[in-house]
Length: 185
Ligand code: IMP
Ligand code: MG
Image 1 (cartoon, rainbow, N blue to C red):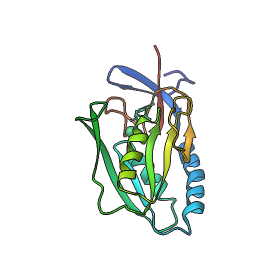
Image 2: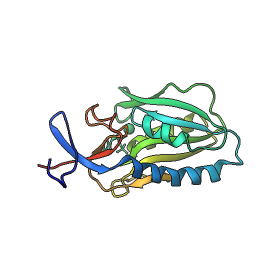
Image 3: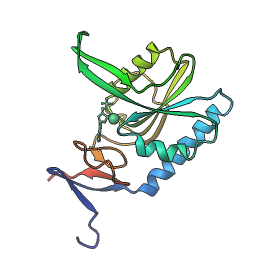
Image 4: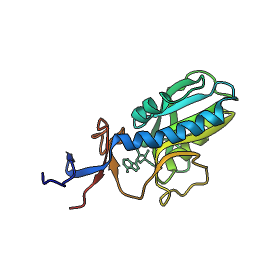
């Protein structure tokens, strides 16, 4: 590696280079944590809902900065072939107890087109959540094409493909503590 070359990792058939070190991620998390603390400090106990698998690292770091009492749950959105108009049905796995009337803060790793978050919102609305807000580590505003407000994006990025900090390329790279971007060779 040359003196100024960036650290690289190989995952399957692709190469990625260092883009955002963990310290910078943490500074951005601090900013949204402050806003969330301010917005929820006088609310009844919210449920912070981590979406697996990608959110686990962001969830851990964000929660350490949350100062109000909260419940924490993790869920997985599973899709299976079914009979709705698109032929694909989504189901929430792992939701414990009643969320009717409760304030929910969804914690996502990344919001890209918004398709995943829209499905999730629909499912949570079926469960009659009282309010729903979205916190996401990364937000791709140029790609987002839905109307739900993404209220707490820690960092905006372009349309590049990134891995690390919970995000994967075909299941690899989730364990990297920094963010790496794909190198087009
Ligand atoms: P959506 O387009 O907002 O529904 O995002 C779908 C999913 O694509 C996200 O939850 C991620 O799992 C994945 N995704 C989108 N962009 C990236 C990326 O840059 N790196 C890794 N996964 C991504
Ligand atoms: Mg995801």
